[in-house]
Structure formats: C-alpha cells, structure tokens
Image (tube, one colour):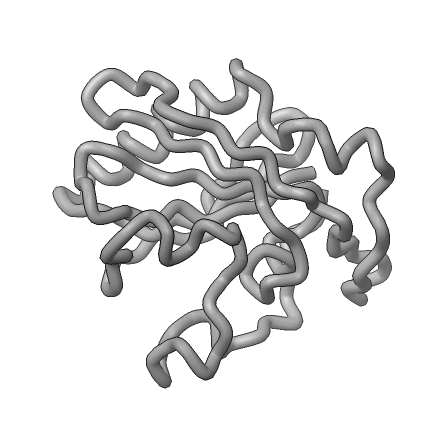
Length: 159
C-alpha cells in the first residue's frame, strides 16, 4: 500500500517522512509528489504535513511494475493516517537510536504492518527545506554518481 524513504534534514531534531500510494519506486524516480510529514524526534510530535498530488502510483503484477493513475479521492488523501504515522515514527526512531546516527530508511506497509526494507547511514543532508519542497527526488543529473536515485531496481516489495 505505501512506500517511502526517511531523510534527515538540516535540523537533526526533526525527521521527514515522505509517503505515497503504491511502491516506493514512484517516489524515488520522481513520478509522484509524495506526502511529506515532519516529525519531532524528541517527542514524536507532528510538526507539519504537506499532502502531495500523487497523480500516479506504481503497482506490481506478476513481478512487472507499471505506472497507473491514482483516483482523485486518493490524490487528496494523506497516504498515512495518524495511528500509522505514530507507529512508523516510533519504529524509525528506534532504528536510528540503535545505529546511533541518522538513517536513510526504506519501508513499506502491506495493509497490516510495516516492513523495513533497508536502513543505511545518511550520507547527504539537505541544506535547506526548500531544496526538496517539490516532494520529488532529485534528478540523476543533480545527484552524485553513487546516489541511490541513479539505481533503478527491478525488485519491488508488493502489498
């Protein structure tokens, strides 16, 4: 149902959760303007919410990913509810505390529970919030050669 990445922003007291309907491939590839939730690390309080357009989603059928339109109702709806967001924020903070440093965490939700796909140390931090205010992933030309945005995986987590 959902897919996302967590990015540390310039203020290390907050985390940014970007989420959209479907597979995370749509967020990473910049096909959708994801929802963005800013959460305070100290108390897991919601700081701000920006609902992205989410005109498309990536679905996987028989191991093949395809881009499809999202219906108008889901475009305007947040891709995470308050209970899901609280559960995810607590999980992501637990992972960060375990490793002792900010993490770039990829996860998915199968309609019943969250699954952690991978966690790795944050290697590039945003200088300012406006740098990614579009909610889109940077294009490969704007990323470093080893940036995960350059890689396109054929393997996807399905719901």
